[in-house]
Length: 367
Ligand SMILES: NC(=O)C1=CN([C@@H]2O[C@H](COP(=O)(O)OP(=O)(O)OC[C@H]3O[C@@H](n4cnc5c(N)ncnc54)[C@H](O)[C@@H]3O)[C@@H](O)[C@H]2O)C=CC1
Ligand SMILES: O=C(O)C(=O)Cc1ccc(O)cc1
Image (cartoon, rainbow, N blue to C red):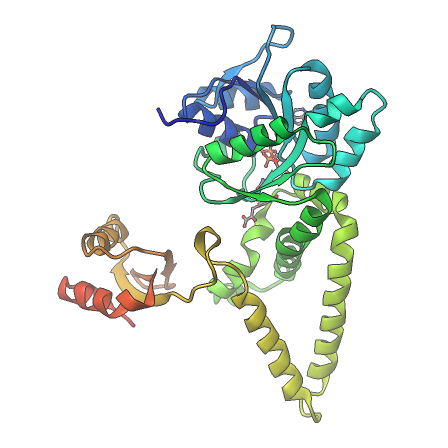
């Protein structure tokens, strides 16, 4: 068994996608995990897939750590209850918003400074569009950022325990206060979610023959529009204060774009468009690369594969045998043809070698 920073036991309250993923990851590392969820089926599925053991309320339990993985709306109430019920435990939550939850816990008349000292708000920056325990993965957090939002009254050992959770699950710890967290995620998570939903909602009345032409541009920009509405109405409403200024900024840009495109022959119009595209290029280039590394432009090699079982696995095995690391992978199917296009990203210095090796093995390299 791998060594862990946590000793356990750990109680996970809320065994949906995130809670079950936490339970799976910790159980796989040999820790003793207990599970509670008001939904009997969520609780049972989580236990059945190996996330831990259902905790029967009323049975004595003194967890080292309580992880609250409930929806944002109820998180503050569940955290408060856990602080009162488990007087020796550190209590963390993993909700996508932090400021409103800290305020609500603090505002509860039953919560003293001693209680609050054991609470640490946290947020793993990892998830999926699907909710529920059946979609959970123990490896969900590997190499992903996990924000630890200690507050002024947090106890040092509780902050360490919260960080141990992130580290034991393979995540990268990032520390900031709740306000900085909320303004950061408004920009890098909540705004993209809204933008994606707005784009996808434009497709509602699109004719089928238009949609049939869709490629990765549309798929990339609408992937997260498939997210769970029940969760997102809570996230967006809890972080509205940080989100609204970003949306106002976008509205200004959109108004300017509409004005420019209303007369694209006007003097300065093309310059305006070039500026918009240029600013987009510059913003996109600022997004860090894999594992938080600086942005890195990978080289792309496109391979044409037959659309039949095992082809992509065989291709990856051949690339692996050549000792070349695949940095990113995308498979595209061309409509009406029995072939797939596999885009393989590698570090630029290995591109030519990859093309030579694959061509020699009989693969059809498109570019
Ligand atoms: N889905 C994602 O991609 C991410 C979600 N989060 C946060 O994780 C939390 C959980 O989200 P998911 O696991 O995706 O949702 P989910 O819908 O898969 O699971 C939520 C679970 O909480 C349970 N629950 C409802 N009321 C409860 C209560 N009063 N006490 C205890 N449990 C209760 C539900 O029965 C359900 O099993 C949310 O606060 C969300 O903001 C954080 C990072 C990523
Ligand atoms: O799928 C993605 O790209 C995400 O960004 C997932 C996600 C959703 C909600 C969060 O609070 C954190 C991460």
